[in-house]
Amino acid sequence: MLIDGLLIGGLIIVVGIGFSLCFGVMHIVDFAVGEWVMLGAYTGFILVRYFGHDPMIYLPLVFLIFCALGWAIYPLIYRAVSGKRHNPVLMGLVFTFGLSILAKGGALSVWGYHIQSITTWLSGKSLALGPLTIPALRFSGFLFGILITLLLMLFLYKTRLGITIRATAQDREMANLLGTDVRKVGALVYSLYAGVTGMSGILIGALFSIHAAMGVKYCTLAFFVVVLAGMGYVPGVIIAGLILGLLQSFVGVYIGGRYNLVALFMVMYGVLLITPKGILRRGI
Amino acid sequence: MPLKNGHTQPHTSASSWRWALLGLALLIAFLLPWPLSPLWIRIATEVIMWAGLAQSWNIIGGYTGYLSFGHGAFFGVGAYMTGIVMLHLGWPFALGILISGIAAALMAVIIGYPTLRLRGAYFAIATWAFGEMIRQIATILEITGGAFGMQLPAYLNLPFFYYLFLLVTGLTYLTTYLLLERSPFGYKLLAIREHEEAAEMVGVDTVIIKIKAFALSAFFPGVLGGIYAYWVTYIHPDSVLGAQLTDFMVVMAFLGGIGSLWGPFLGAVVVQLVNRVLWLVWGEGTFYLVIIGAAICAVVLFIPSGIIGLLQSRIFLPGTAWKEIRKKVKW
Image 1 (cartoon, rainbow over the protein chains, first blue to last red):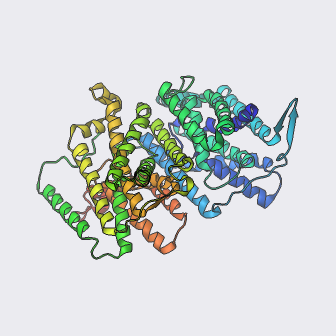
Image 2 (cartoon, helix red, strand yellow):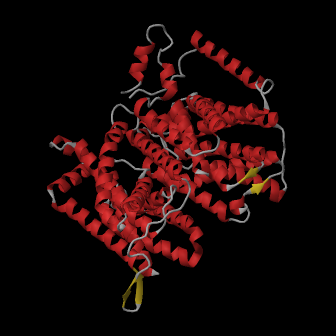
Image 3 (spheres, rainbow over the protein chains, first blue to last red):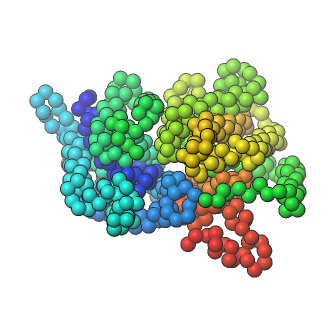
């Protein structure tokens, strides 16, 4: 059970990191995060249905598709949060809220309420690790999560572009003064975030199920992880994601899956009360 | 930054003209049930209910600048509270809606206390998660009837509910006008919205003021929810706690113009009428979500001050209409 929780946590980390990065760099709380997961899962589902093959090989393709989507939508978001608005942060919130309703409504209209699932060659297999047996799909999801996280970390901490992104997150105006094109950095971060989130949608779809209203769940999880980690503090997401996975399987086993959201909210409420900047006190 | 407050001019002829318009509107509202068929009385009642809900969202979202994405939960709590009071305790309806309002306001205080001390984004997230949690609790608990919902005693009297909704919505607007447009409390809220640190610096107790505003904005949805439960007589988690409730409140307030007294009213009338006409033409569907989402995005992008912002500019003077629209609509 402990292992199970940790394995699910791996995937949640990927969603949370993009979300946190997005908030850190652009101060946008993206309400549409769950809808990116949902759209990613459906894209994977459609690709498998029309072209066959295993969904795993579509991961890079979906990443590119969603990068392009994020890049295309970013000018609108930039417009919503800049200019002569009374409260840019809130305008961004409302705009992404509108986007999420739009995506959810579109998906419901096109695909209805049916529940679908993706099967991969790993489905139903399991690994034996000493005394433990682990479902192979969960394990690969976890590996995927760790891999993406490591790649993102390397990108953020070792490349010039990554340093620019972190500088923008730290002090937007100063970065702008020193010659960073803040708008371009924002577009890059947003498309990266959309790509990673859409890609993880395939694995989430393979692990659980796909339906048009699934976004709400992953939106809650991403919010939870980011609040626990401290808004905008990327490394904290890893710990918070693992805690979330553990908490979920713990509640599922001992209290009952129906109380999942209640337990999540109680913990989130407690964290906001005691350490509003996240459990590591590093958020903004 | 200029304070957006169009209602503090001295009493001029324009102002008395405004009062006459208000009186006429009230008169029409009172006489409305006579010529209408039951279907249209129902639709008019809904429009009035939504006008009240949009305004109560506006108190925290528009005037205070803290977006509550879980406001539907207060409506649902009110509906269930009235149901429980009437069914399980056997108390009268009037007491039920009062208890509903107080329960919703208390809940707002409990939720607001930790989250309102933080930045707006945390508040939005926390209220959103809170709304989802309340819905889940309502499907689990025995006293709320779980996923099957509750059946209240039926009271089939359309005009009664029409006037009751009119009364409560009227009270919502009156309270907003007196407390937010005409009192120091309202100015404190505007100060918080425009610059919270500065407001704190000059001695506004921001935490208490924000909690008060949140409780006030939760009280009216609680009461309206209670009336709604008795009106439709059958409630279940999706009908009174669904995410669409909050979605509609947000889109109505934004379309009409947040932070203004009449914006949410205009937004509610437009959105609910369009929604019902679409429903009459197309029947039940999910496509309305696409329209709502697109409407929210478009309003944020092009007319952030809403319909009321368009009206307040001088588009009615001859020759200036197009220029004024071009000025307000941001391309």
